[in-house]
Image 1: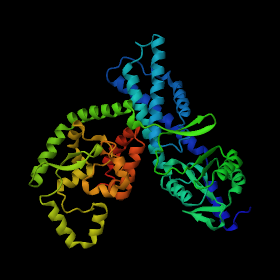
Image 2 (image 1 turned 135 degrees about the horizontal axis):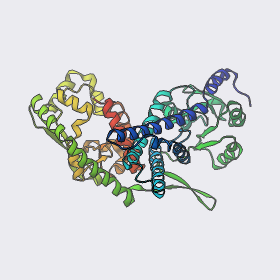
Image 3 (image 1 turned 45 degrees about the horizontal axis):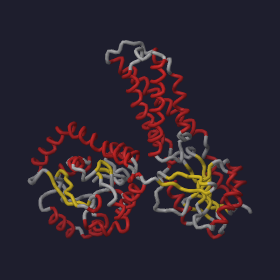
Image 4 (image 1 turned 90 degrees about the vertical axis):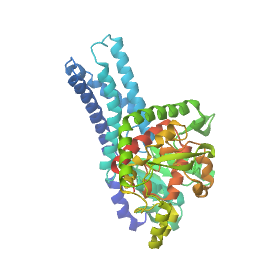
Length: 480
């Protein structure tokens, strides 16, 4: 088979620019810098707090940084591509904790426990996790859109699934997989998809992978017969160091699936964490601890907000609305009042004067310039401070810190068959939709994100969402 000559220039431009080694080198350098900074900060903070030691005592431990890299590599954190942020959070946290526990045990066994400060080790442990995660996030924000960043990927299949893969990877450059060409045996599909050339049949895979140095391939042909799929895997699988197969399992759990060998039979194991007592207790404990801690810390702010609401407009401080909780039980979700009195009539009058906004309201129940929102309410919504009273709902067990957005009865029909998934968990103050664009995404996207959360729930996913929530609140992304 021959390449389409008209596509050769585009193919060359795409594949030559993407190389593997810069991504690995920058990821390693970022981790080294983050770990070194965590060590220096912990040592000098402890020294500032009347520490009686010389910093050189800790610098002799510098070779231990190699162990962190080895642990991260064992957890699949290098080269740092094709890994979900939740998995990255989990493996960085576990690997870093393991190394610090081993280091502490070694110091204790060598009877040097009184020489080194426990405060330095504890602070370094916390800072190491935080700074490595922050460093990687900053690294991706700076370099992920560069043409040389990431690993080149060949996609086998130019159908609907192949196009979905291309669009997903294009929209999420942080994944680090850059599609550079597509192969499909159907000549009618040859051309390009989202700027990625479809250059010929699948038989070209070995020669193109070798000449273009492409280590990754994604087989996006879920409807292909079993015999044909096995033939493709056996004939072309050994060409690529990494081969990803997109199965015909859309709308299925994807985050916590593991492959199992059952006497030569491939099985996919999905652990239902919603049914496991350990993870459920961990979620309850995190909710209780953070809510009590947050309630004490934020109590003065609650008083100030209450005073500002009373000064800004007449009406109550709090606003309660009936929402649907776990197992379909109704409860009253509390917020700081952010709207004027007679809000419904104010909205209707506004829509009557601006009929062009009627469609937008019916579609998403959101308006960028909502006439019902007060001046203080606009600030509270932009910073999400209007939802602070829902900490009371968390203490009552009606809500969680993280979960699907609590909905009202009128929204049940819009959830369709995904409403059954919604009722399996406790709704949350924050969730995937809040950290994925908030009001900038469509209503259907929100429903899909809620469904994804339920299917892939774990304590690690909750921790990731909580961390992302802090960033989203600080930047005001998608808030109005």
